[in-house]
Image (cartoon, rainbow, N blue to C red; front, side, top):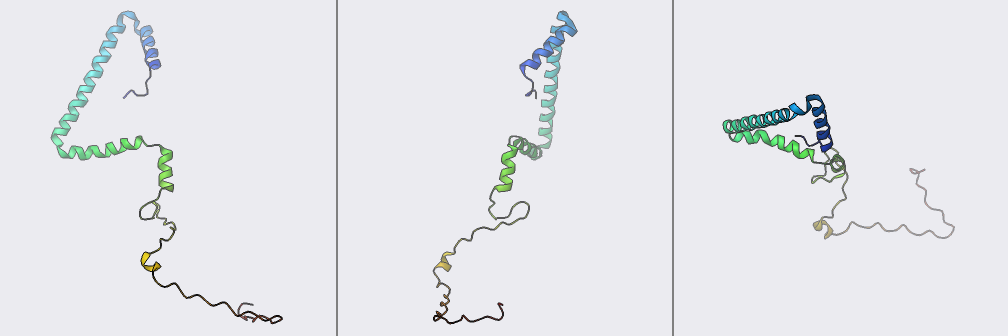
Length: 138
């Protein structure tokens, strides 16, 4: 709960409390704050236990999305974005629907088949002979 509060902040609060309340009332105020925090924790624990008892197995279903969100907090945003943008999927489609081109994997059944027929080279021209003209190409 107080993960971001360091010793420096606690020291500043103690010194401020000493100046505001004075040395006579500071121990009583600290004890009151401690008791209040303990009561709030007990109330929260009691409410959670009561909810868990009343809801039974449905309570776990309610907690699962919250646990998933807490797991997301531990991820590094740079790694998460890089994985989404550049990570390979099993089916080849990205979350935005783009299906990138993948190199074709040779089929072992097709590789055993006969290769396609090779066109023969055109006949060589004699010296001084003009090549045939294709009217469609010009």
